[in-house]
Amino acid sequence: MNVQYMSKEKFACSEKIASGIVDNCAQEKMLEAINEEKRLAQIRGDVDADGFHYITVIVDGGWCKRSYGHGYNASSGVSVIIGMLTQKILFIGVRNKVCLICLSISKGRTKERKHACWKNWNGPSTAMESDAIVEGLLYLESTHGIRCTRMIGDGDSNTIIKCKERVSYGGRILKVECANHAIRRYGRALQKIQVNAARFKGVEGIRGRKILKQRMMRLIKGARNVIKVNSVKNHNEPQKKVVLNLIEGLRNVPNHVFGEHNNCKETCKRKKLEPDENVHPLMRSSGLLHAIYSEIGRILVACSNTLIWNATNNPAENYMSQVCKVSGGKRIDFSKSSGFNHRSTIAVLAFQSPAQQWYKEYYKSLTKKSPATSLKKI
Image 1 (tube, rainbow, N blue to C red):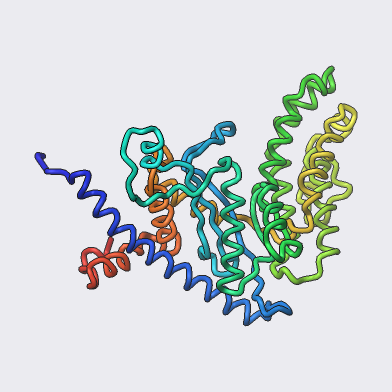
Image 2 (image 1 turned 90 degrees about the vertical axis):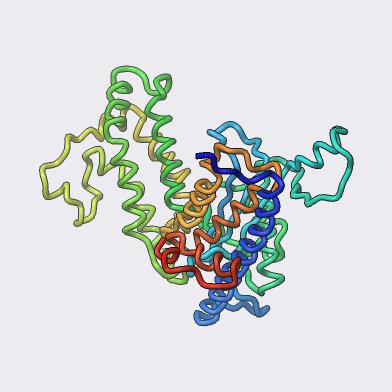
């Protein structure tokens, strides 16, 4: 098409101007969300003896590249804190291990010069999430008088340990287990049991593992449904009886799936319909049923005191999907300078203003006038 493209210098200058406006817009959006969380906490009376507002938050972290379960060496990472009630982002923290200019100077390729250095992390990539979340908790407490006493997150125990160690009110922080992640870990444990031919061998073991493979999804969906049915909406409701009902329901799921309905409640449809083949004795004699009970106790019953809230970190996962979208599906390396920082900030605007409505406010900040009608329809 013979269209002249932008020079490297022109692109860097334009990016610097645009990124400053994007950062300001994102900070304004997060400040609005923080004030709204404080207002809602004040209405509910969630203010402690020290005058701090205490809230529930959703936390998560992500990297600039995909790990595939083994490559934990990303150069950049981002962590996010989201208010439970507003479902809006309150804080993001980005960690960068590399600055290309500093690297070039250290190797003697270029002369030392003044530049904007984005490197702020020298530790391992696996510690980026916990460090950024601790920074966010300290910022909310010192600047806005907010204490995050409940944290909804995945099964990363390192994050909650660091928060308890480094935050002044760490002893009061309660880790709320994400129900989706708990069920996912339970499903992976069932898969390991199903393929363990050395432990469950013989005719009964082979038959039992075959039945487990056929009914595995029913076990997983049954456990998830029990959590939903026994959930409470208000975090301040009495919990003891609800937790006991949840534990009873979780432990009865294998019995129900394998055809034993003596302990099922009246809502069980299998009692009224034609019952399944009762393979419960076979699963018990093969040892598979005991193994399943053990995993239920280790993974689900152990965190049943927080599973009753049926909380998930889906909002944080949605933010991470926005980061993935603006960073080229994590296939392009933006971690050597300010690229990942800017894209993480753009993801904040995309999350706070769905359907890409943030373009209008950004355009108005950049040009000092409202966008044209055609742009508003985008």
